[in-house]
Image (cartoon, rainbow, N blue to C red):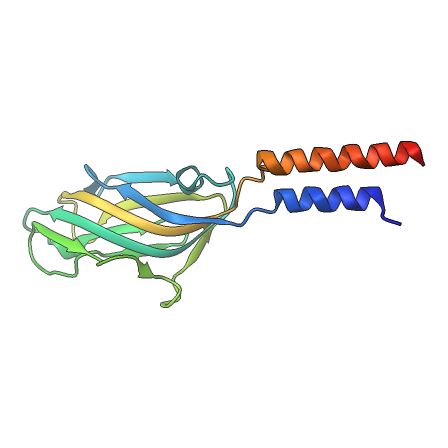
Length: 176
């Protein structure tokens, strides 16, 4: 004999079992200045995933233009990702700017051991100048490959199936 509660629980679990949602999140850095700018991004809101849920970041990319004034060089421009405490230096050039720099796509962070999880999905980026306080202007985008927790909502067809199954079990119980 099938236990009604077990059957309803199984149907509900199947209806709510949604795979994690992965995607690329592009963040504009237009107008950012090193030092002095902080950008805070809710990756869950960008991915359409569970608010406040964990987000796993496994890749990063950039297409940026840096405008510097001597004595600052483009290699002095950095972004500090606060929670995982990882610093990105997109340039590498020891020249006064301007310069345009690209990662050429998404860099696999897993392959270099720098992947990270944000407990609440909030990413904080601080723009730094490692040499002095001479402003460095940023334009372009920084992109992340990320996976968030899905919002557990059944689709209409699944919800209808759950309701019909529940009605069937109630009808069967009344006959017994």
